[in-house]
Amino acid sequence: MTALNDILTTIRERAPHEDGVNLKIGEEILRDPASVVDVSIKSFANRIGVSEPSVIRYCRSIGCEGFKEFKKYLTQSLVLEQKFTRLEPALDGDGDERFGRLSGSIAAALRSVSETEHFDRIDAAAKALMTAQNIAVFGLGGSSAVLAMEAQNRFFRLGLHVIAHADSYMQRMTAATLKKGDTVLIISSTGQPPTLVEAARIARTYGATCIAMAPAASPLAATADLVVPIELATNIPYHQPNPVRFAQLFVLDGIADRIALMIGKPAMETLRRVSSAVSPQQSYLPTGD
Image (cartoon, rainbow, N blue to C red; front, top):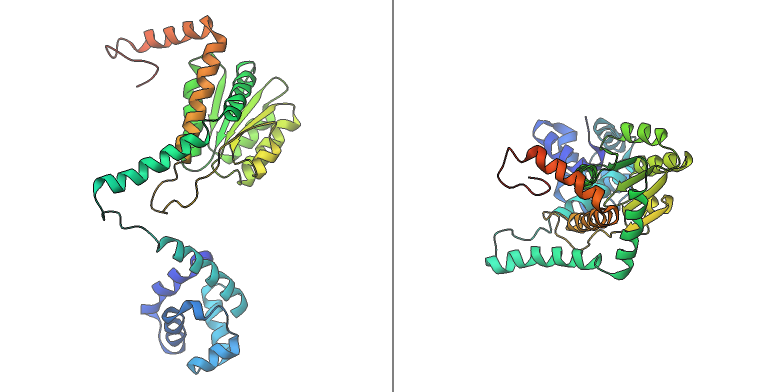
């Protein structure tokens, strides 16, 4: 099956098995793919000495309706390829330089959420979660899904009723069971996934409060009742994990810390019970291994 948004890979994989006209067309595309996106089918066919119907048949064999659609997907594939050919040499330079870049990006991510406005929003989120009858936490994909599970791990030990979901169907179904007095926390690096936005909308429809940890200008932020804005870092090499996850974890730590302090002794009692339940396993265990 052709991955149309990565059509260059498809052409490269087919090339050793092509012959005749198709081989000629494929080789010309791979020779200079950027030059193909701006030419007409007539110009392209004349350039390599084949007929226009042959070009159309080649495009359809890949999964496109015709040459125009083929050029659209070729453009997308070129953009993707250019992003990943700008990788910095992973092993070049000394250790200080390479790890300095990593630690610098992490420090910048933490600074971006270490402002008075963010602490005010963290406090507001903590209050909404502390008073909720039930809490649902949603995240999709990589770090956001992991952070959703981490939120469950942090909150249940404070005596809160919380459940996390990383599956979009479960998120929407869970959102439909929420009601006034419940809160949903949605963590998203981009704030773009339509399923998360829909889950937020469903939860609010039934009266639940929606908190979003997402970029301020995202669709998810626009849907939520309360936003703790966390912006996705830019100018990060594509081989380097985006440091936004450190900012997300910092905000989550801040929320959990505020909840624990606001609940006070009852939260400490719950933590004591959790600690006593696992203390036979290890000589020292704080709030998790």
